[in-house]
Amino acid sequence: AKNDHRGVALATGAADDVAGRQRLTTLEELRVGLDRGELALHYQPQMHLASGTVTGVEALVRWDHPRRGLVFPDVFLPLAEHAGLMGRLTLQVLDIALAQSRDWRADGLDLVVAVNLSASNLQDTTLPGHVADALSRYEVPPAALHLEVTEEILMRDAARATAVLEELREMGVRLAVDDYGTGYSSLAYLHALPVDDLKLDRAFVTHCDTDPRSAAIVKSTVELAHNLGMRMIAEGVESEAALDRLRDWDCDLVQGYHLSRPLPADRFTAWLAERHIF
Ligand code: C2E
Ligand code: CA
Ligand code: CA
Ligand code: CA
Image (tube, rainbow, N blue to C red; front, side):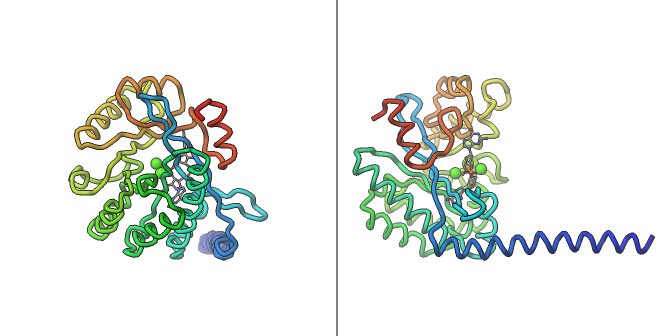
């Protein structure tokens, strides 16, 4: 029995080694990938519900791996964060997003671009300076950039995060609390933090047309947001029925597969053109 036990332990250890080696390989490839500019962005439209206008996009990072093809953020973002690569990664994402924004503006497309920030970004006091620099390099007005920060991240080191966020907001960049409703935060921070928009997590949005508890949460979050002078963004809108309810409830902006999946820039502009929006 003792031997069996040891055998199991060894087998588990071996499996861990394989997983560990794979992570290490991915990490080394990611470092090279960052040097070679292998990151790409896909864009998912955000629509203003009352007018039906597409007012902006969320930029979502992908890694265009030479052999593996398109790699999704859940695979490499945790590694990047752990290895201290998130600062570089975010600056690259900002660069791609703002270059795209400049190109859209040149074509007469006045779209806001929302970029996601990570936990380590908010602890980095040099971030606001880098953002200001990128905005002026691409001649994009600060108001055309939105930054999304998850509720969970906001709670980690609220003092330092608040300082970074305040500096960004003073520049005129708009801030959203992402995945709202999934963290373990109190309402006190909503009161204290310099944020403009609440982005309610899709867990409460997707079935808001059929699930009464989701409906109650959506309705009260819209009210909360508006009472705080914020806008409410619903993500994970997957049906016309959910969209209709969100409109009834006065939600400001929607995003989700029902409108469009995240798309490469050229396919996104084709999608826009098809909808006769420009
Ligand atoms: P997120 O910020 O909550 O982004 C929304 C995610 O939900 C995206 O997944 C998007 O493709 C997906 N989604 C959009 N509409 C729907 C829908 O109707 N239904 C469902 N089920 N899902 C929908 P994605 O692109 O795989 O990104 C996953 C997460 O990775 C993001 O969640 C965000 O936390 C992170 N992420 C993505 N890009 C970046 C980035 O450039 N920087 C940082 N720091 N994080 C990023
Ligand atoms: Ca987001
Ligand atoms: Ca989200
Ligand atoms: Ca999420």
